[in-house]
Image (tube, rainbow, N blue to C red; front, top):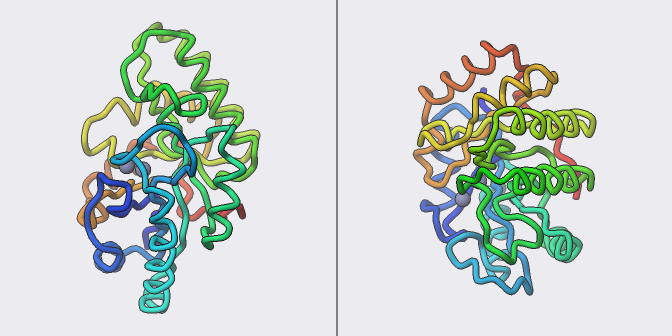
Length: 255
Ligand SMILES: [Zn+2]
Ligand SMILES: [Zn+2]
């Protein structure tokens, strides 16, 4: 039976499908656990993220739909309510209290933007700048150190085109930190399917050397994206070939 903790909804502005369609697709594709993790709202954040994350006004609706789905489908599939969040230090406590009040159970870290997210510099944009890599790694480690993140989504999101030695040095620091903090790393099926810069084979060789456990994440933005057995097999084979331990389920860290 499959488990997926990384599922979006249209509230983020770049996904499609109803909650019911996601749950039905998960049941049909053989999942025994589905976690929703839409892009977290950050209230009072000055940047306009209309097509990137849900707006805070939609959080109650997100939670209400989830609890309704749980009541309807809870006998057929284990459902959980989470969000995928950047760690924006100045706004993080506010986010946590809002999520707690809404009944959100867990967080996964997706550090798409750096610092407090005010510059809009996307982590997945190609860069040869070692300072950017250093900032990404440092900020992700700060995020994981909070103890609130259940797992680390696409840890290899940062698209570094500089020297391989520098990449290896920093990503080893990231892998060691995640391992020490007990946070599993996600191998991202969306990136794999779309041929993005992640999963990055350089990263996963280091993760294997450092003994980091992995979780496969579907990162579904459409219900159909849960039914991709070929991509799942490829991801599983890649982890096996590297000798990376694959976790089927992950204990949710309370927020
Ligand atoms: Zn997304
Ligand atoms: Zn995602």
